[in-house]
Length: 78
Image 1 (cartoon, helix red, strand yellow):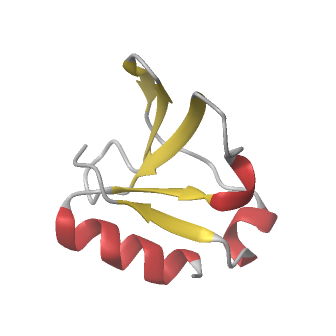
Image 2 (cartoon, rainbow, N blue to C red):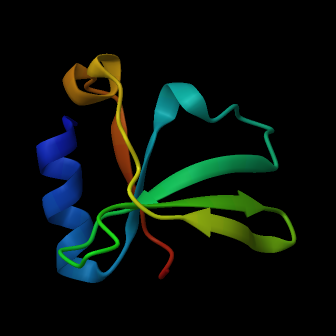
C-alpha cells in the first residue's frame, strides 16, 4: 500500500508502519514508524527480538519512501 493508506490504518489502531523492502524475512532488527499528530512528528522506533530498543522523533522520509507502494501496517500495538 502507499504511505497515505498505511498512515491512515496506523492512526486508526495506534499502530506503526514499515516498508516491506526494508525488513528482511529473518531480520531481528528493523525500524518502524509511529505516525503522530504531536510535536514529536513521526517517531522512528528500532525493534529487535528483545523488544523496542530506542526511538527518535521527527523521522525524515526520502523521496523513495514517499512514493513507495510497499508500506505495511504493523498490527502490534506500539
